Length: 170
Length: 182
Length: 197
Image (cartoon, rainbow over all chains, first blue to last red; front, top):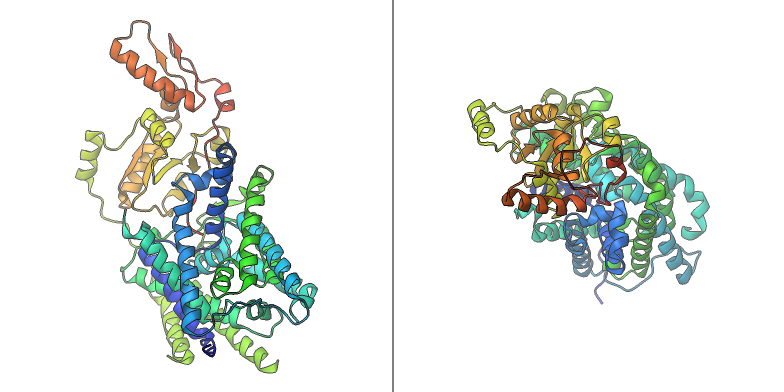
């Protein structure tokens, strides 16, 4: 197995990420996103299970108004994210099946916390109309007040909750 | 369909996005969580570098007329739900160690916790969506429309740009100092 | 490329920013003759019935904009409409492939908003000439006059079908005034928009 290369300089990587974001602005007239893809997939599932439920629910219905949610721009983009992440990991010898966790908990606990944390983030992302990619990065670069409010609130909450989550990571 | 709306554009942009995130090491939950314990400032450095780059790029390209800044979609501001959503999101972030974008990158490099986070996210969005009628009033509250920092502060766009960069550079300085100590 | 080089570059660009002026494009020169021609050809507006058809067909890129106050919008609005009052209309970014339909109570403000958006260089904008009143009389409560021709009858049947989709009440005889019950029979059509994130 290839030895894993070290990660890139974070400032340089950040600038590259910023250029990708700028590219999205210029080419697509909008920023990056991630939680929107999950919303589209959720809408697709609800619509498949019960079209009436999807249509009567304003949240899901809004994701149906632009055509099939499975092929929404955001969903195709997130497929790209997975492809790009895989490509980078592969080229750098970082492809490995593993569970990244702190030393204090076991694999199963880690997976449960990852899923639980994910669900909580899902709730927050719906309310905020986005996540760190769509709001903090993209809205932040465009100086949107709501996006900066989201970013500051998220990091504040993270720092405040960190001591309580210590056993997960330290 | 213009290229901008095409699946190809979305895929290429997404690929570059995922590639950059993985290069930075943000596919590793330990690194992301490290930010909240002030051990690893990669998250801060990457995020602010990215925001500053895209912000300066958008400003100057707009200024020299190469792009129409007003034509770029700015997310609308709904102050209360976005602030509260942010608080909730932050808790989930430190518990899972990943965010929606990085969970996909983590899963892409073989990390099962990334996959778990993705499934959790889907469930969270699904359940919240189903409960939407209960949340609807709060969700739609405090609508300010497209509302930028220059408008809020009553300052020219360029001045706000300088302030954001100054803040970012100060944050980087602090990060380096704190990292050296730990 | 070294991080310090990037930092120096960012610093330079940011220090120059306050002296650069606005990053937004200046308003475009108004092509008055072109606008007048569009108005005379009727390309500036769309009928309420046509809009109803577009909404039902989920026409891609359609954005229905209500330019009235939030209070008026909350009392009643066309399904899928977004409330963007006149003062917030200018800074709103509309995508090139979007079809914008403006409406107001009687049509005057929407017509003014139309000129505003055209002055900002926006294409593919229309408004409902008779405003919400047209929506009521054409979509929510279309009527068939007793002495209608066969052609009128066919048009009425088509309108009725569309009307029922929106929870309207097509009828015979003289036109009905808008009733309070119009607001109670709103169909379950998505009222949120989706962009990005």
